[in-house]
Length: 155
Image (cartoon, rainbow, N blue to C red; front, side, top):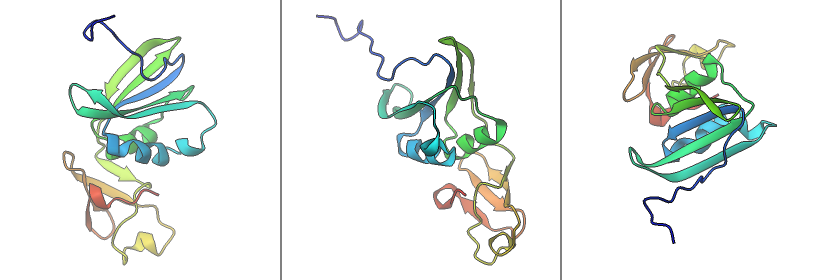
């Protein structure tokens, strides 16, 4: 019988080519899947939630076969899961590993919570300034309403 210290398990299978989104707060895994449109993606997607993590206690992970995220998609990940790490895999090898960075400006993917905001009545894309990168607070460019992470509505 192997000791617990020497035994290693691969809980989610290895990825030949694609991207791993690691260190997602467990409660945000399904939100990240949805905002990236992975719930209707044709390629293989593997995910785990409530996995043990030395750094976070519990974490989530998403592995997406043959998908390499663009800047706008990475910004979505950063807003939903600012602690996330992206790992790019090619031929089973890690090519790049980097923490996501919360952008200065968020365009088009979060709805303004102010019902009177012009973006809720006209065909105008939303735009927010990030006013607090730690707590993820946004200020609408048009009506100046401040929104915190728990009130975000992803569009």
